[in-house]
Length: 100
Ligand code: SF4
Ligand code: SF4
Image (cartoon, rainbow, N blue to C red; front, side, top):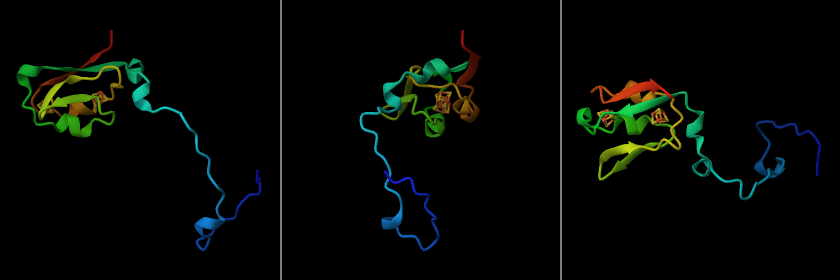
């Protein structure tokens, strides 16, 4: 292993940089149920939902389930409760409540 500190300048080429490492089988976020980090949870009111999908667009965790262009619910195994979706909904279809 080369522990030499590299002095990278704007003229350094990619061939001169230190090789990076690759971790195999590290898994991905889908493999971990990160929903238990949540302190607040979004609650969907289907009767008020216009299926505009604005909440789905802003969810950073891909936790809003859509089928045939319509909201079908939430993936609470992965929703971290950031609340961004609830701020986005202009139709009162999403509440944001404390986790029990
Ligand atoms: S933003 Fe509100 S109205 Fe639009 S799809 Fe989401 S829950 Fe439904
Ligand atoms: S609270 Fe955050 S993570 Fe959960 S569904 Fe809404 S936007 Fe996604």
